[in-house]
Structure formats: C-alpha cells, structure tokens
Length: 363
Image (cartoon, rainbow, N blue to C red; front, side, top):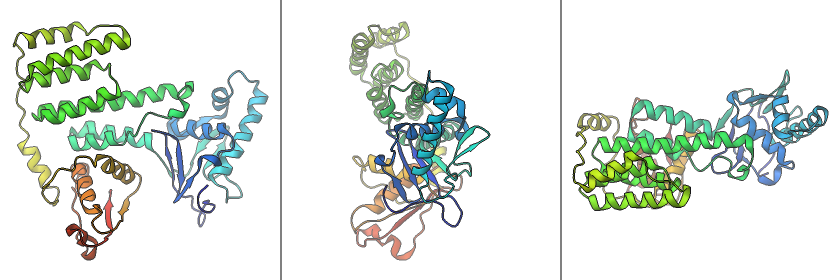
C-alpha cells in the first residue's frame, strides 16, 4: 500500500473511490491501495460485489452463495468472516474497529455506511441520465468519457459480474448511437461519423451503428462509401455471427443504389448554440486539439470524483489549453454555466510563460 496508514482522521472517514471500469482500483483519501495489499483474492471480490450492489449492500448469505457456491453453510460462513476481516484490514489498517468502511449490520454487509463512497460505474450511469435529459452533445461526450473500459476485465469469467458488465457496455454503445443522432440532427455529419466508428470499433457487429454510417455517407453525397459500408457490414456479420443484414438494412442499401434516399429534415440549432455561448467566457478555439482527447477524458473523469481539481505543470506544458478544452466540453453541464476566474498569477500560463496552477471546480 502506498503511503502511510490511511484510516480515519479526527473520527471522520475519508472518501473511498472505487474504479470498476477498465480494471479494479481503490483509493482512500489521498492513498491508493496497491494490488498486492489484497492478500485474499475473495476479499477484493467482496468489495467489488458491494460496489456493484444497489445501495452498496448485500445480505451475508447472498455473498456466501456468490463467492462460495455449493459450499456448506458453516464452511461458507467461516470463509466470509475471514474474507471480511482481510477486506477491513486492507481498507482501514489504522482503525481499531475497522468498521468505518465495511460494516456488518443485522447480517447485511454495507460498504461505506457513512456514505463517503464514489464508484465510477455509478458516476457513469448518473452522467448518462443527465445526458439523456439534456440532449446536449457536450454532456453526452462527458458521459461517454466516464466509460474507461469494460467492467472488471480481470473477472471476465465470474458470473456475478457478467450481467452488469453487459448492461454498462450496452449503455455505453447506446450513448454513442444517441450522440451520433444528435450530431445528425445538427447536420454535423463528420462528427456523427467519427463517433459511430467509435461504436463499431467496440462492437463490429453493431448493425445500428453501420446503418447510421450508411445513411450519413449517403446524405453527405458519398453513395459509393455508403454502399462500401454496407458490404463491410455484410462481411462482418457473416464472419462473426454467420448472419446477414436485416431486411430494413438491405432496403436502405437498395434505395441508395437507386439514388432514392430521401434527405432528412434540417434541424436548426442556432438558438441553442447562442444560448450555450452566453454560458461561458472561454476564448475562441483557434487550433485543433486532435490527439489530446485522452488527456481531456482523464481530466473529466478526475473532475467527476471531486469538487475541485488542480492541474499543475511547468510553463508551456499545456495546462491552460487542456483546462479550456475540458471546460468547453462541459458547457451546458451546469445550469450556471462555466466561467474561468482570472486569479492573477494563476492564469499567466495562458501566454505559455509561467508554471501556473489551473483549478477547475465541478459544482
């Protein structure tokens, strides 16, 4: 475990942050729990189960059934006590009671009963709800960026993780398709095509994404690319799942080949963009930020975990540009908008001179 014992400070439990998407990680306050700290593999599994459970709690017998299926009750109960002890030791080595982060109350196991818990899967689902309410591409992108990979890839063959893994993956794909639809409504076909390729790279047989790409190529005056995309879909479906495109997709292909695809109605979004412009005082975007989207996504994930995030670095390292791009993506996320505060030396890095600190506040 990195650093010193991280238990309670002044009687108050520190925030526990658990990552399940892209791999299991845990931090408590400013300390990160190293993989080697989990002496018992099922101690980590117990924490994962609780992080995934509704309300972050499950009955002890349910945990026994999941972790030791087929075992006698007494044997499973003894194993659970041992695993519970080890999980508490890892989460709170400095505490005498070791109950502040993992408690057992009336046979119910509860993770962080005091509520000081952040789980990335929860944050992703909450962001998806916000995006769907807003119908804002920027807020959709923020939600999509919170999905940093499939759920618990190290537990790919554990039945207890399988259902939630697929739910979250399908939500991620659905958000991408919906974002592409929003771009199409705005006649931003290039952006729509870009995000659809993201969906196809994740799931090559996702026919819905292929259909949208076929239609977008045709609407953009590239029928030959639309037909080529149909052939790519047909080949992919045959190779991976030994099937053919649906009749609806085949009809779409025939309409494009015959030049009969009707244009979609134009959706004006001038007023919406004007409204967004009033919600920030960010400088105009002068150059492309392509190639740095991974950094933007990492900052947005970090900002989702805290109320205040500080970016530091040497002069000219790109802190200001990175902060501005993050804020640009988050315009519309907060009702009051986004307005960077010019705090003297803090923002002298805008000219590339100083090694300033840049601070982002999430709410």
